[in-house]
Image (cartoon, rainbow, N blue to C red; front, side):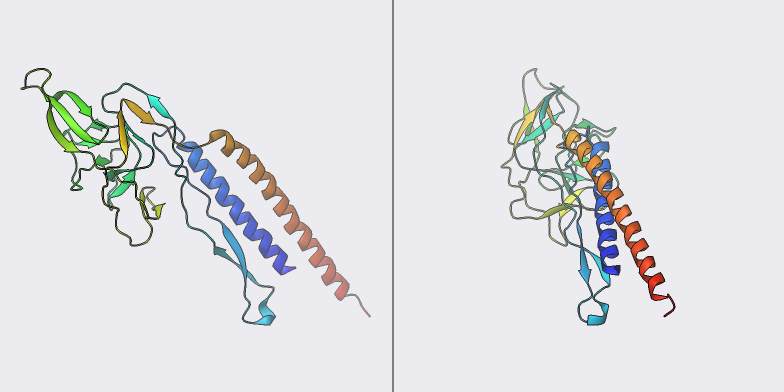
Length: 253
């Protein structure tokens, strides 16, 4: 009976994890370039070395916290500083909260007070040397699909552009990525960041929406809540059966 109860408890942990992940995804559904989190599953493992403990079960993480790599839809904003990645690929950012360099799909760019290029969360966009991109005052900026920035400076003749930094991108082929505790995308474990390969293609004046399936998340929440209720009822039933068996064992002979 203990075994069944522990399995049901493990199922409750999985359901709780799914509900938390869905809530997180739905809260970020309107964040440009957000990658939907995937649930961490746990499996029920048994203490097999000793036969007398086979009824004892513990919860073991069966998969890492990964995220969906599906592309989000592109939204035409016509804004000069909005840049979307077409297909697979990532920008390099320095998180505003500190920490190691990370990868991102977020392209709602702007300038901070010092003319550093930042995204909507205040993360600094990095160049090919992984230094923050800082631009001088300009009349106009053109971002080529290769990531090359062209600038029309105020002190130059109108229509004259000079090359600026290159926005590096990487498709991170062969690198397993996951979200760190701070929510940023990095290689799993101690692996180093992938080198820029510039194979991704950028589109200026567009934003990539998040890839969160809000309708699917709502449906999953309803199903998870039903499964949660069923598991709770199963545990209560198992408890009643166990207590009934105990009472029978105590009956006088």
